[in-house]
Length: 408
Image (cartoon, rainbow, N blue to C red; front, side):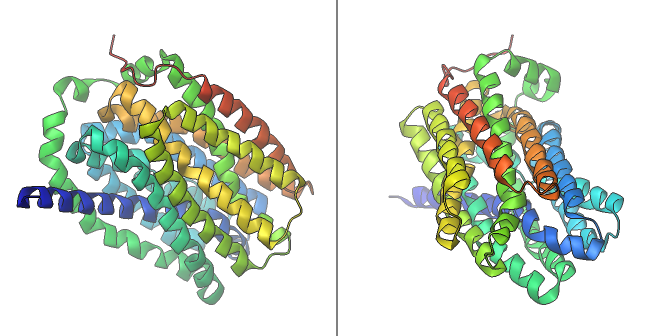
């Protein structure tokens, strides 16, 4: 191996590590709203159902703003969007615990903070590094980057719970700003690496193509419509974990530190699941990998409905939720990238995430309503089981995942 090859490998490792840092820190905040909920209820005076609604609105913001931020990334740059995301995220983290009524909480916890995390989402981060890596390497790397979400969960879930317990929600959320400030020089470095490569791959026609034209081309494709069906159900499943799983385990009589530890297990399992799905998608048809993940969620939902609830159950089921949680992302983004091109992935994947976040809004809000009405969490898992079965059937029905769709 000559010196140039060694330099290329070293550069690849640094780029992937930087992308994982950006995405992992963002996901560590995005996935831990549930841990923040009870403390925010105490300090803001806003009830559980209303905070659930704020989280649901945030889920919609996270989805609805992605295609538009994807277009902004095409017009400006992905790193520009990431820097903007950092600013909004830090602003939301600082001001949210200072809110004292529903409307200010909705503004900063339901709108500003989720909009900020959207700028650091998977599609934007992959859009920033794909021109440097090339599409072939990016296909392998996508699973690793998505797996970094588990690092955020594994480290930040127990850390956040400990900070809240010892110092309160305001100090805890302010402390979360620190890693985002550390990210800034990392993003500047990615921008310097990305500049020449981005100019090389981005043609004039791609820059001038409208959002309507890109989405029209996508919606004409049957497989993309099936992806949308599956991804909407995925959002419902994921928001149960992010918004209600911690409180659900507490309702079983499980202590807070133990419940937060299960989320560490979840984080580790998401890393294994996402990375594994990325590599399996190279070896096997991605539609089959995707359909199998959704089918596993049917079995998990049955476990919540019928198995005895205990600490061992909590750890086992959380591990399974982690293995199947983020593992939908590599095959979903991979199919989209192959069919429509990596340069449009942030936009088209971002629009698919709208359906994902509509599902997330539904489970965030309905979970709060079911608890308020005394129904508990059982209805959520019944709905999740049915939706997961639909998603599995839709995913297995995808055809021609490797055929690129050309503009008309």
